Length: 81
Image 1: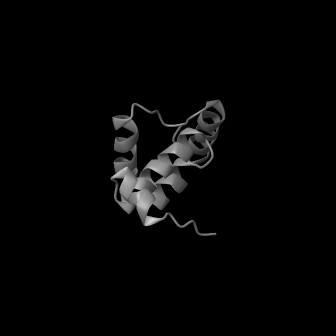
Image 2: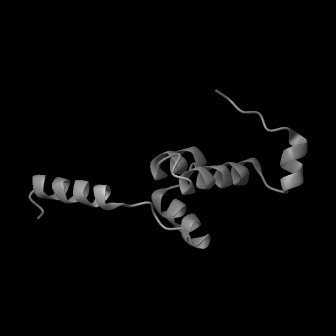
């Protein structure tokens, strides 16, 4: 599916297409509609660049207990814990 944003809307925001895509990606990430990986890939940023954009907006990485437990399990399976 493709979404077309009319030029007058883009002009009204005074943003570039890439800036608007980033804002939409961050909004969806903040609402936990998409993962950071998807938001980052769609906005074409590196991990560090995406984290920097989140920090500029005073947003945290969505990381919960289940994510932590999964990371611990992975580290144990790799013999790193």
